[in-house]
Amino acid sequence: GRIIKTYVNQTTFMVGSFIPFILFAGACIYQENERNARAHDRSIGEELGIMKRLLFRDNVLQLILFICLINLTPNFDSLYTFYMTDYLKFSTEDLANFSAFATCCYIIGLVLYYYKLQGINPKNFYISTNFILWVLNLSFLLVVLDVLQTWGINIKLFCLLSQGASTFVAELNFMPILAIWCALCPKNLEGTSITLFTGLLNLSANSSLYFGSFLMWLINITETDYHRMWEPIVIQQAYLLVMIVGILFIDFPDPSKVKDEPEENVEEERISIVHSHY
Image (cartoon, rainbow, N blue to C red; front, side, top):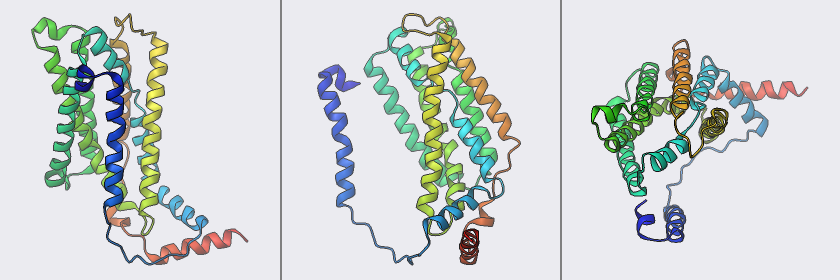
């Protein structure tokens, strides 16, 4: 936002495109310590069988299903951005300030969870943080319905604090779920397991963008008419509330019981797969 204010758009895109190359160069220079992991001769079919058994362990599949459904909450981020720039007349520098503050809150959330919140009950924590997110997201109605203006509260400051708080809570919200999945990963298939889990999360998160776009088209919100802006907010938070209530009835898997898959179990899986071919 600050670059756009000072330079032309081409400069902004050039800088934004160049930054990932810094990370790429750093990854090439970094020398990772070699790990003397024992090589395995499992076939692709055997590894798929192990992943299938992971998904169908007690409470794992239903947990993944509900997390993906929560991630599928219709996403209206682009609508909020246009609303703030077109209707509230926020500048690109204001949006840059929001983003910078949210990044700081993101880092604070990581540090806080690492040092203070690792031992908390994951289910209670996940439900609580989702409910806080629900309240924070619903509070944007105060902006849309001009309540803050009536109360004499600075809208720009409210949006800044609201985005920071949402980012902070959202980061805390995801950490216990990621910790559970890491603990459930089968031995020597950790990378595959994490890729499967994050892939499902990314699929549902990206689908939420299309879900949100479809609802905006259905409600018929355009860049010249934001008078019905409250409707997508209500729909979004009604969906999230239903999912929060639903997850109350879901039992979270206990990582302590399945943290490391014994080699004999892997061998049994290999034998069962071989027998299934005959």
